[in-house]
Image (tube, rainbow, N blue to C red):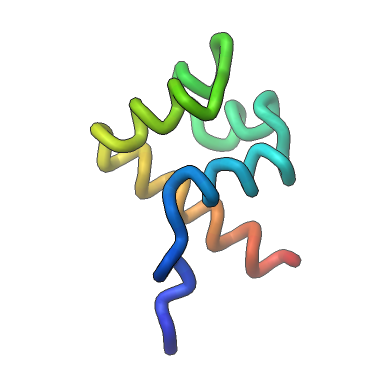
Length: 69
C-alpha cells in the first residue's frame, strides 16, 4: 500500500486540516500552543518542522481525517 503522506508537504497537510476543522477544533485535537494562541500557518509550520512529536500527531490526525472523508 502506498504511503498516503508521500508527496504531501507539511504546509498542505496543515492547510487541509485547518480548512476542515478550523483552528479552534484543531487546537483541541492537537493541544499545542501554536494552534491555540494566535494561530497561523507560518508559526505552526515553524514549530512543527522542529518538533517531531507534534508533527507526528498532526500527520496522524491528517490520516484520520482522510479516512473519514
